[in-house]
Image 1 (tube, chains in turn brown, green):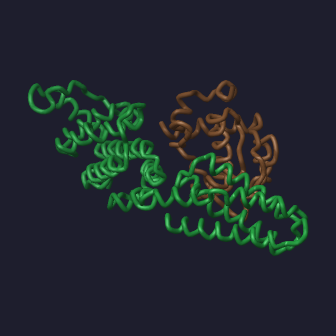
Image 2 (cartoon, one colour):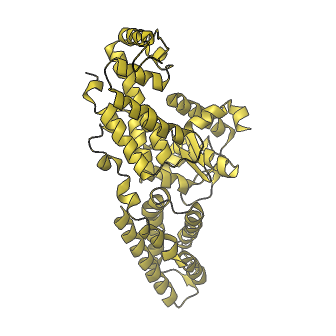
Image 3 (cartoon, one colour):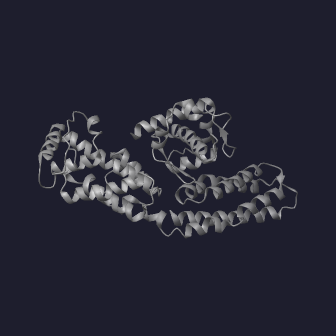
Length: 125
Length: 276
């Protein structure tokens, strides 16, 4: 469904993720310009990870925090505020709130994820 | 990293027990004492800010354990609001503390030093170039340090091939083309089986050349000697292929160190592959 909607190909997906058992590794990570963009990019990519593992395009805000800390895109003071920005709201079916529940990607979010995957796959060529 | 996280875990556990003791001592049915609620909120924050990420990404504690504890911590966070039941606090704290040492402390103690030192690749492979010089190398180092060995090898190989291509561009494609012609014409000697002749005009053309051919022509260009070429093609390129294609050949810590030692010494820090 996602592949059809976004016209992302399996080849493009395989260029950015490596699935080993129940682990999804991103071999091509976003080179986001700043922490806010990094938080947004990883929010989308973690939805992709959950779709691969559990067939649901949804993102847990604490999973995002954990990943952002790991990859160096964590801005403690603005983490919650970033989620409230319009571009975030537009990409998810509800508000992402620290310590809150996982939220599904909106159709716009799936499109944005498609674009991100294509762009990362292009960089991986 | 290991000892620091272990220390953080031990303090976290001790403070959870302290909070439990404080809650237990309350005589009312609900918890309204601000100091105790702050203590609960502070502990929840410590999990999300300082513990979950290294446990999940550096020490690879199982996803189920991470998710289960994160849910329990979310409950603790909610409970830290006013007038929640003492009994709910105690249940939540007991859930978090249940098997805490077995779930977190023991697995980290048993990681030997793998996470702490084996994959600080830049320490192990001395003289690796500045990772900012190449996006591929940067990513390879990040993968290696995160224990994604196969991904690290694939990206490391990209870093090496990227440098070879840039060097050939620097030297000039005409030289590459003429050397490949000379090698094709050889009927005896090391290159007698080399049957290709390239007409490369752009970097994009060069990117279509198979890695093994690229390396062989580098030998013809005297950028590499025969032993270096054999090592790159027969060992390191194989590690790359075994990492990128499904199969049972292992890629473990020693392979990773050997691979990066080779590409570092043969390509990345080899003066013949300097770009200036």
